Image (cartoon, rainbow, N blue to C red):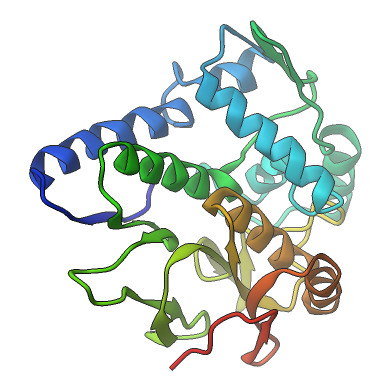
Length: 286
């Protein structure tokens, strides 16, 4: 996964040993879903349409994806792979697919359907999955859980902006920042403990004929037709925050705001020409 990650721990223990173990655990988790590795579980499932003897981690990821596909009414959709592929987000040969091609892809390939049993996972022949929209949050949760099991409660795990922040830094509160999606630097920062994730149109994109095409694509239209630049979500775990942040960005401003209010989501969104809105006691940024 082409993302910067960092882990900081404070405690009366051998932090180097723990960080070495964390690094090993991180690589174990990312290998499960490494598209570039034909032996990874995601590669086998996408190629064979069946994965026998899946790991518990892989099953947990897919179960969480099913939950949020339903929760967001399909705006979070792991079956988006064929649309992203049509734009060239995997081979990096960027292109603009024709409307008819997109309509055909949506008709034939989109609609998250997965069967999870004890011994196998099945997807339809027409589907190919990419749950990268929630994966960083899932991994951050697992790493945070691993650190706590080692008896450390003061730490921060940051995987490309998806964070679990616990305790404090030698008695000083952790301070985190929210990236400005429309330029360099930060929108602001604030003291924080908990789980937070941000999705934005600055993460993966290309520009053709002066227009920006991002990976935040609607599974209903196959197009980049949102006016959302970013969404930051605070939730009880980072997986949930990550999935919701992605879905809100796909929805567009009006639907996102309605969803935030209906579901009482703690959110900060940036839309339009840089309009910043906070909801449900999301911390003030400075």
